[in-house]
Length: 151
Image (cartoon, rainbow, N blue to C red):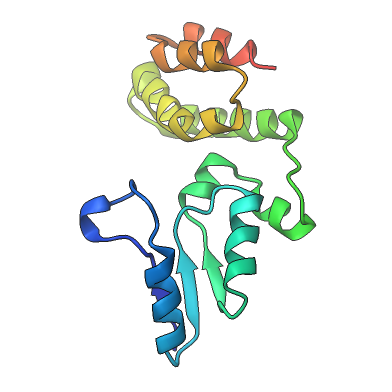
């Protein structure tokens, strides 16, 4: 009933440049509704795609929601509305839930949280030092100290 297009080739995986010319060509040639999928991590990127392709039937967002769990709020409100308190509430709930359900102890919890920080880091471009400390943390105390130093 619809076609979802992620305009990259298979060898690019999640890297490389989206081929918007290819997407445009497909959008024009297909009779089914077309859903755009790829590199929507900010409200501005969402707006750029929906402005450039007003006939697109929908947008899929994947990694953008891991990076910014509040991206849909931004899209719905029409502006970037990052709130550090809201992020901290989300992060702390995620941390606490992982600590309850992961059976591998502190090491597994640390690895899981650091994995998420590969995405969350983009929300803190002015905190390069603190992000580096989060990524290099070798125990939960160092991780928490680095995380708590974010502003």
